[in-house]
Length: 143
Image 1 (tube, rainbow, N blue to C red):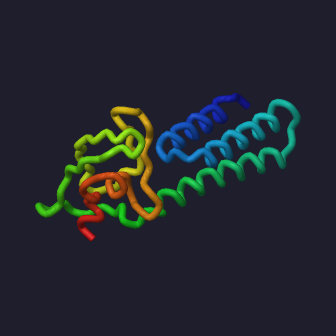
Image 2: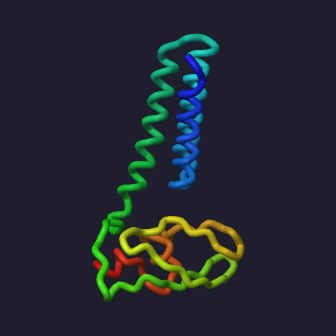
């Protein structure tokens, strides 16, 4: 067996981390990769393979739960009453910048242009515009 499948799974884990910004699934996938590597290249043990696959599944499930958590992120048709620009204020440095929002989805992460910190929605909000913007996101405006 080559290392290519393990390498692809680990690269996929990193891409998933960049999308969701969740460390636990990344750590689960890294541990799963390590267990499968140990099972195939150090000493063959079937339970290590199954444990590694279970960790991959757990990491994917946690990312899936994050995706379905935001119920207001449904696609909606655009209408003239929806405002697509909002001034977003960084809570760390106070920098304000006008941004254009996506008309059909929420934005879960935003990098401040000034201090380069990553903003995430406050608890109970679906996106960074609902938490730090002057105008709520289009899905919230529609509902």
